[in-house]
Each structure stands twice: as C-alpha cells, then as structure tokens.
Image 1 (cartoon, rainbow, N blue to C red):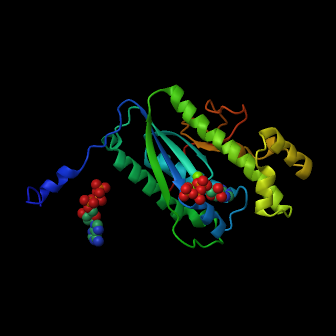
Image 2: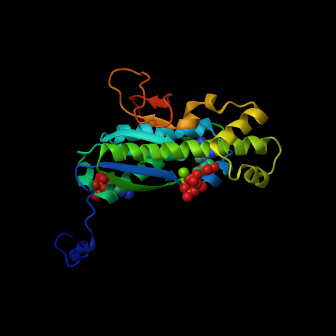
Image 3: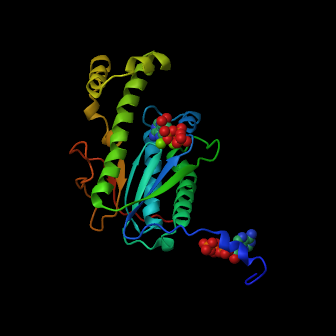
Length: 243
Ligand code: ATP
Ligand code: ATP
Ligand code: MG
Ligand code: MG
C-alpha cells in the first residue's frame, strides 16, 4: 500500500526517541502480583521458586538484548540498564519498552513449569513497564540504591508481618502491631518473638538479585551498587539457553 491514499495516517505517529548518551533503564513490574501470588500459593513472604523464575527471565533478557549491561530485581520487578551508547531500535521508547516487557512476560509463562512443575498457571501473568533515561553514573547508582532500599524496607516489614500471621495473629492485628515501628524495633520483634536473626536470612530475600555478564568465570564479585551493606546478593553469569 506504499504511496496509497491512506499513507498519510503515518504522520500522526509521534517521534519518541530517548535522549542520547544516557543510560536507558527499563523497569518491569508484575501486574496484580499480590493476587497472582495468592492464587498460585506462593510461599510468604518470599517464594524462592518465583524469585528464581524472575531471575531466569532476566537472564534470558540479557541474552536477547545484548545492550543490557546490568539488571537488578526484587519481588515482582526487574530493572534493566542498557548501555549509554545503545542504538537499539534507534532508541525509540515505545519499541524498546514494548519489546522488553513483552519478551519478559512471554518468558515468564514459557518457563513457569520449570519452576512450578506441579502448579498449573491459572491465568496469564503480565507485566507493566516504564523507561527512564539517567544521565550520570551517580544518578544511576542512586536509582539502584532506591530500588534496593525499597527491597529492604518491604522485606523487613513482610518478614515480620508473615511471622506474626503464621503465629496466629490476624492480618489486621499484624498490620496494627507493625504500624509506626522502626527498623530496629522490627529486628528485635523478629529476634525476641521468633528467634529470627534478620541479617542471616538469605541475601536474595534481603537485597534482591542482579544479573550481569561475566566473560571469565562464575565468581562472586562485590556489588559496587550495594548501598546497604557490604554483603553479597545473588548474581549470575552468562548462560546459554538452548531454545
Ligand atoms: P501492581 O499491579 O500495582 O504492581 P501488585 O499486586 O503487583 O500491584 P506490587 O507492589 O508490585 O503489587 O507487589 C508485588 C506483590 O506480589 C508483593 O507484595 C507480594 O505480595 C507478591 N509477590 C511477588 N513476588 C513474590 C515472591 N517471590 N514471593 C511471595 N510473594 C511475592
Ligand atoms: P518485525 O519484527 O519488524 O515486525 P516481522 O518478521 O514480524 O518483523 P512483519 O512485517 O510483522 O515482519 O510480518 C510478519 C510476517 O510473519 C509475515 O510477513 C509472514 O511472513 C509471517 N506471518 C505472520 N502471520 C502469519 C500467518 N498467519 N501465516 C503465515 N505467515 C505469517
Ligand atoms: Mg506488581
Ligand atoms: Mg512490585
């Protein structure tokens, strides 16, 4: 239909190129995963299978989109950082966002049975996404720090909340007991009432996961982006998937 009478409709399309020479960050987040996690009986507060499924989707993303240099994930979200010089789809925001979100959602469903072999998917999981450009390394670090602080705050709250609920409190009682408590008080509650030392819980729960390519070998590398502690989170190296 080239040069047809209808071609003018293309002029309504808007230019959406992302700013050049900036890190492109795509953040993907599960849609209604609070309900999805209940409907699929995730362990609370942290279902390791679900986190590993998210991590596998992230690894697949790094293979599919070589411009992604680093990814950080927690709960039902994952952030992907594309290199500053990326020319992926001429940096068109809608292309980059729609393709990455669609690929991630698709892999999540595709790999579900590997992580939940005995649990049927009741309905299709899907994800939202946003794309933001960050102009400096400092701001990019702060972005990741922001996500990781969020991980810490939510995880500490959820660990207390579910410990209380599993001990017989109603969700409302647990919520009221935790209202207004500070970090230290939550740690003490866990230790005194449930003999849980928060700092010894798995790093993946407390700090999230990250994925990046390491050409040499699988090794523990200290995470320069870890603003909370000097401990190590979960990290992965290049993997080859055979599909
Ligand atoms: P929205 O559609 O606005 O993102 P949401 O229901 O997905 O809403 P989020 O704030 O994204 O809400 O939080 C995701 C929720 O999914 C968590 O609060 C938790 O209940 C659940 N969830 C996600 N991953 C896990 C996991 N690995 N283990 C247990 N629960 C999880
Ligand atoms: P892009 O990634 O740029 O969209 P593409 O390979 O998807 O590239 P399209 O212009 O979207 O190219 O065209 C889709 C192609 O997929 C068609 O040209 C055809 O070869 C194939 N295709 C799609 N649906 C069918 C179908 N139902 N039966 C046979 N072939 C199909
Ligand atoms: Mg969500
Ligand atoms: Mg979320």
